[in-house]
Image: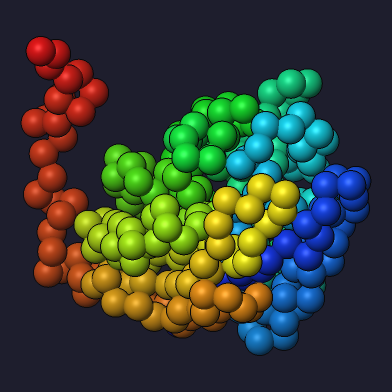
Length: 291
């Protein structure tokens, strides 16, 4: 069986930046824009595809407008059901980040994983929720409560870590310990805030945990918030920290990378991080000494 998995990332700008337009119409426009790229991915033989954070709409968290609660939906629900038809059509695993409504008044920043036969495998809920520098996510999301699951898809063992999560090394390691071969990090991040970290943190996580990382960021500016330019540059990086494929800073596009999973074994035979780690010596992480 081939160890090479053809993977894709979709980076997109929001087509409607007008607050007078109903939320549902904005979401529909963004969904339709993505469907064309999903078709392209299927036609180009992509086996695992990941969409950007809250893919079917703008990144609305620079404001605190309650109208965006209307963007939330159950997971699984209508969007995951639709994506399942595309997964089955193209024999393609799809990672689907959405705004999840768990119950009345309870919302999560979530990514569903759908297997190549259209089966819903489960979801990851974003663990670390920022409340800083124009990213007012605590107004919209509860912290995730589902741990760091791994999804055993047709092509690879997949993990998900969402945007702000990437600044926390503990979750990266948990995903590796749980068996991840590829970890996707769908994001929404702007120039001037963390761009200098974009090509630093995630390659470092790939090296420290010896797996592949797929990093996704949207492009363009979004009104009415205008907090800055989403700089795209979605990419795949291998367990050596080498870039496999990379998108532009400004274009809507599908980024495709050929990921050779045998490289994980090659690297782990050299760098025995999982053998040599010392969880017995890490009490200071969960039980820090005060003073």
